[in-house]
Length: 184
Ligand SMILES: Cc1cc2nc3c(=O)[nH]c(=O)nc-3n(C[C@H](O)[C@H](O)[C@H](O)COP(=O)(O)O)c2cc1C
Image (tube, rainbow, N blue to C red):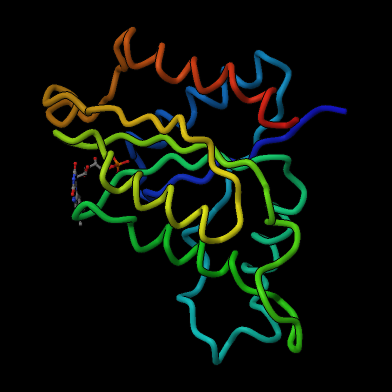
C-alpha cells in the first residue's frame, strides 16, 4: 500500500523558506511513490486544558491526519534557538488524548517515525532542531537521528527566495533515501 507522510512546517509565514524546503521534500517523496499531505497548524487554538474536551474540531482533524499517516516530517526554523510557539502548540495538542477519561498520549503516535529538517540563520536552525529531537523522543515518537539544518544565505533574506544549493539538496536527499527504511 502507498505510504503517506504528513509534512508539518514550523513557520506559518506565507513565503516561509521552511515551506519551500518542505515542498522540495514533498515533491521528491512523490517521485519515489510516497504520498504527502501538509498539516495546517495555524488554525489550532492555543493549548488550554479548559477546552480540551470535547476536542476542538481543528484538533480532532490534526489528530486524524497524524493517525492516517505512516510518518511525520517536520521542517522548522528556530525562534530564539527554540521551537517556534506555533509548532510547540501543535505538538502539545498531539501529545494529549481527545477524549475525557483517557489518559496519556494517544497510542497512534507511539513509535511513529519522524524526520526533522529546518532552515535558519547562521546556526542553520540546529539548536531549535536539537530541542525538537528531544521533544519528539519525549512524546514517544521515533525521530531519525539524521537531523538536517540548512543555512539560509543572506541573498535569500534580501530577495525573499531560497534557492537551495547542491550541497543542501544532497543533505535532504540523504534523508529522503532513508524514508523507506523508517517504515520498517
Ligand atoms: C521570533 C523570531 C526569532 C528568531 N530567532 C532565530 C534564531 O534563534 N536563529 C535563527 O537562525 N534565526 C532566527 N530567526 C530568523 C528566522 O530564521 C528567519 O526569519 C526565517 O526566515 C524563519 O523561517 P521561515 O522563512 O520559514 O519563516 C528568528 C525569527 C523570528 C521571527
